[in-house]
Length: 129
Image (cartoon, rainbow, N blue to C red; front, side):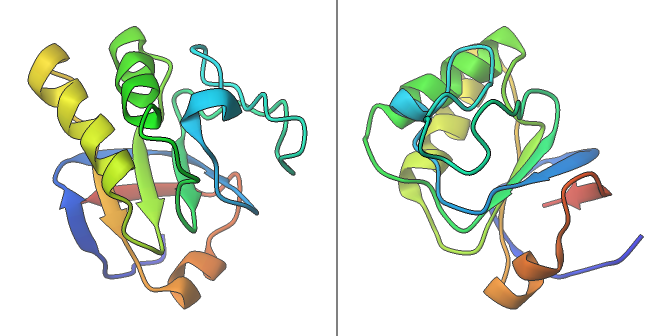
């Protein structure tokens, strides 16, 4: 298993198969509560990040994404971990809310863009933040 160094935006650890997104994703309107990408314009439309490590450059707006992510995590349909190349306060807030309200801890890690580019969908990774 390859190793890379990142910065913890929300500490925790998880391991699982990767889903690497080609474009940023808005959890609000871009995914449903089952963890499926429903944005018909998104390259990974129809794929599920439930129970996977989600990797993407960044989120795509809407402060309501924090609520949707927290609810997905509460239901057990959210990602196991989130790997980003750009800091995203909305995603981190969703992970924090899920931890504080529901006791679900999901790590969010920031890695350099060139490290993110090395990741491949289906690879199994371990995130320790």
